[in-house]
Amino acid sequence: MEVLTAIFETRPEAENAVRELRGLGIPESRIGLVTPEGNARGDTTVPIADTEYPGMGTAMGAAVGGAMGAAGGATLGLAAATLIVPGVGPVLAFGLLGAALLGGTGAAVGAAVGDKIEEGLGEGFPHEDVYLYEYALRLGRSVVIVHAENDEQYAKARALLNRTGALDLDRLRDGWWSELRESEQAQYEADGRDFDTDEVSYRRGFEAAQHKQRRGKAYSECEAGLRQDYSDEELNTAFRRGFDRGVYYYVTTTEIRKE
Image 1 (spheres, rainbow, N blue to C red):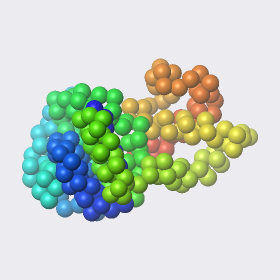
Image 2: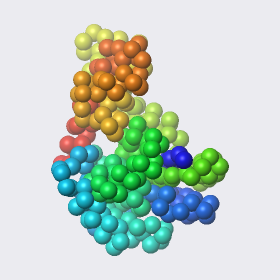
Image 3: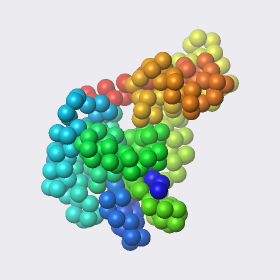
Image 4: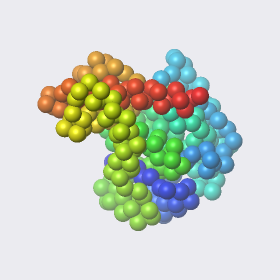
């Protein structure tokens, strides 16, 4: 079983994709949708974060459960709640998968439910691209997430998402980087380094710092895990400098959005 995600330019396009996914026989428990509050009609707000105090998961799970029962997801057949996502702001999440996509599965859906979702999704949960979904939401776009039951359903869902207007994720990633590139180049070259030569490694490190399980953490805290995902050659000086700047970017972006 694998997880599919797709970004759509507008909420109506995303809602249409959700309806067609249900037409494939995919149950609503395996579909989620996240859209900016400006596109939303929900009226129950629940804050979420990457970390939580002991006992908060259960409390938040109850809050979200009540909110999802009350908010306006009836048009899709999915329960919904408005969530406050650090670095993004208010979003409307349809379905538990929608809540889990950006909030992790701790505070957003409760510890017990969250553990069950993570266990079911296994390694398929797209932690490495969460920053892109956040970026897309800040641009006013909507994100759909689907948990396919088998290879056949995965292939059909992928074809459907592409047919209904899913945006190219690589182009979105390049757009995100192009907005940052000039300032990152200036920062890197201030010490006399050649950004054009080192950009690939620097960007790799910068993006690695946006991973859901690494964000906000120093390189030393993540080094053991990074060595499992990258070769010694890849973990060079440019990568580490990019990682440090990526941490700074995440922290400052989150604080700015909070304000």
